[in-house]
Image 1 (cartoon, helix red, strand yellow):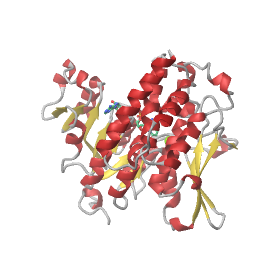
Image 2 (image 1 turned 30 degrees about the vertical axis):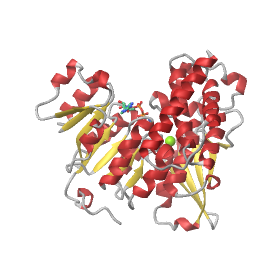
Image 3 (image 1 turned 45 degrees about the vertical axis):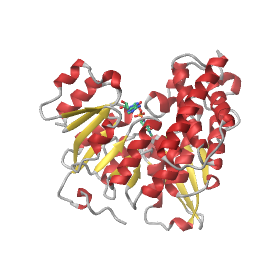
Image 4 (image 1 turned 180 degrees about the horizontal axis):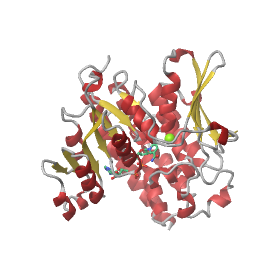
Length: 396
Ligand code: NAD
Ligand code: MG
């Protein structure tokens, strides 16, 4: 079924957008796209977890109708008194949903980090609005529930690899696809041994070679958990199994992914390493607008390198494969344990290699169930977080 009841099909109207997680890396780049295409995009509502000063600034700049603050500790920040007249303020557990489900929104960008984005992704799909999905954890944890809700062309991936794969499928018969090649930069520790990995610092891990992103995904990119999560994300988005998706290191991050067809033809998506391009595509689809980023001059790239990923050293990649193959509630546990372990690493309270140790311990202790409801996933998520914290404190 096509999306019929929104302004998506009314060419004269601007696409009315809500951005959940507007203060993060994806959120601020999305606002930049909206700035550059103010004739096509209208930002109606935004949420932020804690950076209320930025939220107020954006409310003034974009004349927002509604804003939400999702962290109760920041709901009374004095700066919020400076929200512009006519901008409604929401807080509390359902605040993000309240601002984006109104009739004056056509498309919701879910740029929240972590499993916290799942409820919003589900609600947006149920509402019939377009979901521009950056929050890959939604699909990793709740793909079994989300995909049946998604109508044709309703869910447009923002993750660069998945935007690339989505585009490599355009105009093709998916039944003629033979494999997906999911590209991976390799992260800052490409080529490291396990022993070297155990000594890396937070600063080392935050120095990603090709992408500038939020802290959690930057650590996930260094452990290769990000690629593991993306493989599960791709299984749901493109309705394929784990073996269909091959991970390949592409150090320059210029090939964003590829789809190989039965006849041996491989269609690749190339472009600048700039998230504004896939963000914009999720808004403009099926149209294409002028690029928000500098263009690539291929004469200056030199070479494109490919290599195999090392899942023995980067164990998070193997753990995600195990979770994706087993399915059910295991990916939820993988994700929740990883969120806790990454936060602990960022806080300086565990080592880099403790991250996969904690995730493995939680997965081993979990009794896998088929996914049934969001409430069930929320309970499993809470159990895995508590278990991960107990594993971490036992190691200290
Ligand atoms: P970030 O940490 O920079 O920003 C996260 C945003 O979510 C912030 O606006 C924050 O206020 C909000 N937030 C944090 N915790 C929240 C909670 N509990 N409830 C509601 N809102 C909360 O993260 P990011 O790098 O922008 O990544 C956002 C999502 O996009 C992640 O799922 C990430 O995997 C995905 N993604 C990011 C990139 C990238 O280049 N940054 C690329 C691909 C996919
Ligand atoms: Mg990605």
